[in-house]
Every structure is written in structure tokens, then in C-alpha cells.
Length: 248
Image (tube, rainbow, N blue to C red; front, top):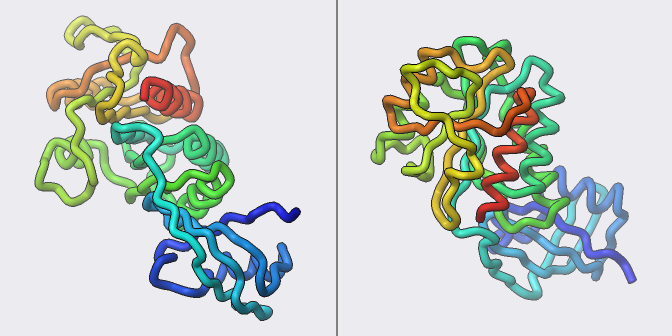
């Protein structure tokens, strides 16, 4: 019995042809033929059981046999905002693994100590799609464009802003400072609340600047720690996603 293959088709319900890249994979790599079963995912909560109705060297048409709405695996909206690492491979690895674990939204931050200030979101989005298919999740994480730290803080607190889909009340910033004028730094795992939205900020390899931390706290963010060990940016981001996922 053949393994059922999953394909990402954003408009699966209204389209009848796989996107070009997915079609190439289906007909050239997997050698799918007319009648072969496939599973489509729209990334917005629905799977579609379908079969190949026609295939050629460059095209793959399908017919939907069954629509399968999925239940969300967690009730809250989980948002990670991180400064990408200088080595992009490490950031891409984080995006892949975080998607496999499970979260809802990703934003890249441009901070004072950032060593990478530009990022190709198109490439990152392909990694999110691949990880969504691999882990067979019904929702693909939302990917936002890179944004300056100060503007991010302003926009996330503005309920009328269209940059983000959610504006959570539970907002956390991970950092390594112990300055007396900063708020008490609790463990993230002790601050998360099951079923509620959560946003966690993770800084660059040189950490957030002290002024950025103060700015975040003034905007309602809670300073948090991920434990006694000092973690690399990509490790901290993955730990944060894992904790949010486990709590929900």
C-alpha cells in the first residue's frame, strides 16, 4: 500500500491543480499517476483527501474526494519574535524545528546588537511549508516581515495595527540582565497560562540592549528567564516555543 503524500495548496478548495513546485515534486520525484491518492493542506485548518485526475511532465491536476476540517491542537495563539542569527542556517533550523513542535506566528526582529539586519522571508516561508507538511499540521505558521524592535513594540500594543493577527496581553522578553531597575525576572514556564495567547521575544547573539529591555517592560512585557544556562539565540527560541506548546 502506497504512503499517502501531503501537498501544500493554499487555495485547495477552489483550485484543481497543484502549485508548480508541488506538481514538480509529485510527478517528477514521486512519479504519481492518474488515480493516485493524495492529501492536500491549505495551511488554514483544513485537509482535503484527493486523487490525481491528470498528470504530465509539468502539471498535476486533482479532484477532491473529501473535505476534512481539523481541530486546533491548542487554544491560544503562540507568537515567537526573534532576532535572526548571523549564521542563517541556524535560524532556518530553528524555524523548521519550531514548526514541527508547533506555534502560530513568527516575526524577525532588527535589534541594536543584531548582526543580521536583512532576511529573505520567501526562503524561510518555504521551510515553514516543508515542516508543516512533514509534521502534518493543518495550520502553517504566519510569517511576518522583519521589523525594527521599537516599531514592533509599538505595533503589537496597538489593537488597530494590521501588521499582526493577534495582540496578546501575555507578553514576555527573554534576556540575561539583572539590573536593579528592571522588573523581577521569573521563569517563562511559570508565567505561561494554558489556553491564553502568548508572545515571547528572543534577542540576538549579543542579547537585547538594556534600553530595549526597558522599552519592552514599559510597554507591558514581563522579563523572563529560560533557566540557569546561557543559551544561544536559536536554542532559546526553540526552548520558548517548546514551553509555549507544552503549556497549551
